[in-house]
Image 1: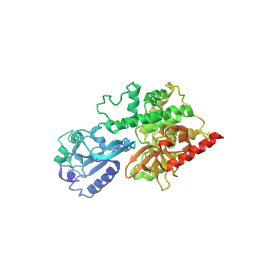
Image 2: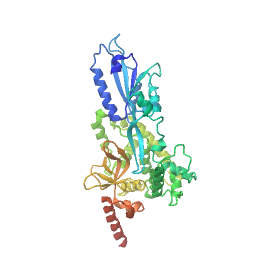
Image 3: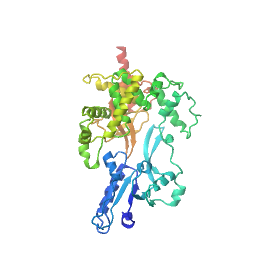
Length: 456
């Protein structure tokens, strides 16, 4: 607002860290600018920009600045409030002023509890230079840095951390094993990841059956390496032939890897968006809800208007459709036919859920008597994400990702039966190496029941 009052004409780009912060700031700036004397200062358009914003909204940042309120009046100005998506990915014409608070959300991976999370951290000097370069692309500009020169020189790192140091490594390890590179510790990485991250990746691949106890690639592992998805999704896809639900599982895998959120929830229309999502909701959780959305998209002939009316993301669904076709081709090459069982069969959804469990049995949470959930083995207290469609709180729930925000949330959840864990992953749910918790007591009871069944 200060720049708008005091500086010559030219648009403004402000960098912030996340959606919530951006939405609040856009409202505040718009309100303050509307309260100014329109005879002395020009009109202002304020646009947000972040990755989950619907494409139509994102396009608005390229609109020209508003015209003067009256002929000969002060010129209008456009203000874009963006995450670091505007740092390198795109150039917005007319930006003359950049405001850089010096923070961004960066990915951090904790191998001890196997969790990736986004944390607000100071940017690097390289990022700061990149941001200042956004000012004056078309004519001389100014960058206002909201930190001291001393902080810039002494406290900010030279370069942003390479992605490989902040990521889960199982996909990389699997590819290296497929290339017959066995000595991972001495492999010449440009930036070697932490040994613990590599150990966790090897352990996970061993539990999934991609590596044997000697650390050598198994036949299953070689097949997983041929699928262009992370190992857990790869295992889930390869098991789909056994359960006769390859089409459905490929759809779910495609929806999870399409790169964008299929549901659109504009702040102003939250209630209508929630009602639209509720019509696709499946009683057993979010994975089957994604399946329902994709089926409805195809049944409505991929109609853009239908997608828009139901608060869905057309680009995400189109991308999922392409990914699904690719995955099914890959499965056929591996000799797995794209079969579907009868939708009316009582085991139709159960088999799909079993198949998901076969890949994600390491990402389980057990309901606590005191409330909330506890993740299996890592013993992190977590809660179901507000976007989850499960109305009740099932005893066992599988999660796709762990989100660290105001609370520890688990996102994309599916209801699971405890018996499946004992049946599909007895090597992981081995009670000898299991930490003491309520889930252990439940598993002991399940094993007893299973033994009694076998004796009969």
